[in-house]
Image (cartoon, rainbow, N blue to C red; front, top):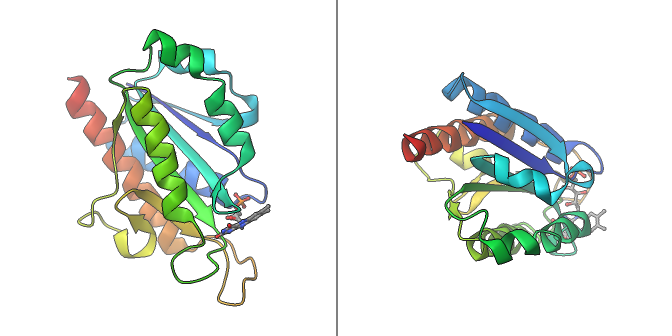
Amino acid sequence: MKILIVYHSDYGSTEKLARAIAAGAAAAVPEATITLRQVLQTEPEELPQYDVLVFGTPVHMGTMCWQMKRFIDRTSKLWLEGTLEGKIGGVFATGGGYGGGGGGVEQTLIALHAHFLEHGMIVVGFPKSLPGYADGGLHWGLYGRTGDHEGMPVGVSEGCQRAARSYGMHLAEIAQRWIS
Ligand SMILES: Cc1cc2nc3c(=O)[nH]c(=O)nc-3n(C[C@H](O)[C@H](O)[C@H](O)COP(=O)(O)O)c2cc1C
């Protein structure tokens, strides 16, 4: 099983979650090959070789960052060819979280879903029964809050990183079931 985690991160929080997802996936399926890539260093042509695609972005102005959207727009040739159909997809996002609702994080995760579904992929959310749901789960995927109540950046909590690990395990387990 080959897993690719693609992310953008300005200050390191989204990257931290990407690494925790990778660690969880590796723990669940030790024989899996897991690749972590910054989105600006990833080419769409690389995607078809993977079984599982996990995309992560900081929330910027209520939705995904431009770096991720630009990358997704560049996957249109793969969409035309249907190359990503049937692949497993996972999503995660971090946000400063202005307001208890997360400042646009659900919109961001759903926007990533929409792109995966447009490609004919199978989207895996974060079920509430998974360990860590209370610290980083939304049924759409993984969410890391990076700001405190005053809007100051504080980074992602340990609990959220544990949730990321749990999500990584879940993704790898689901993919293993699907592939075999
Ligand atoms: C241009 C910009 C716009 C942002 N807009 C939002 C927003 O709409 N909602 C939110 O919750 N956080 C917002 N933030 C805070 C980021 O989500 C936060 O910096 C991010 O979670 C940090 O992740 P990183 O360390 O991976 O860059 C914004 C940050 C920047 C730089």
